[in-house]
Length: 131
Image 1: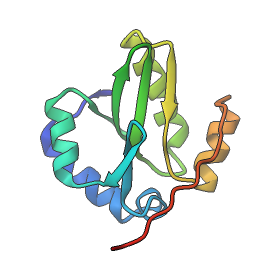
Image 2: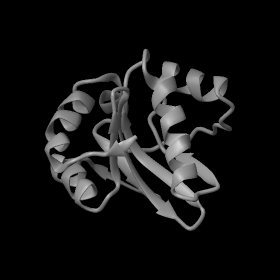
Image 3: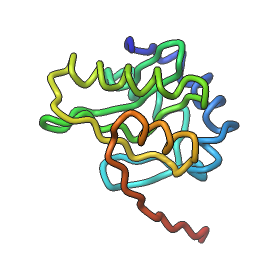
């Protein structure tokens, strides 16, 4: 993964919001244990802060928290998820993190790849109600 410029925010948002991960997430992404609707500005702000990454397999938004690289959003597809996860692991190592955590939607092909590559998965149910 390489640092993504702010110009990548809109294409990444459009791909995610119209794809399987955005639909499964119902437009939400994680910041720690807080969840809210993602906007292109969130991705642009992450790019300016050095927390938005890209490669041909997709995009990742992350933050280093002590010894952990925390990923609360990513965009990829079933054919590229393995490559993007490996790249995220490499990024964690490059940043000196000892762990990689991901808070992502429950999508079969994503969970299967996490299981296949040795991630310990646990499911979280997130409730949302429009006001």
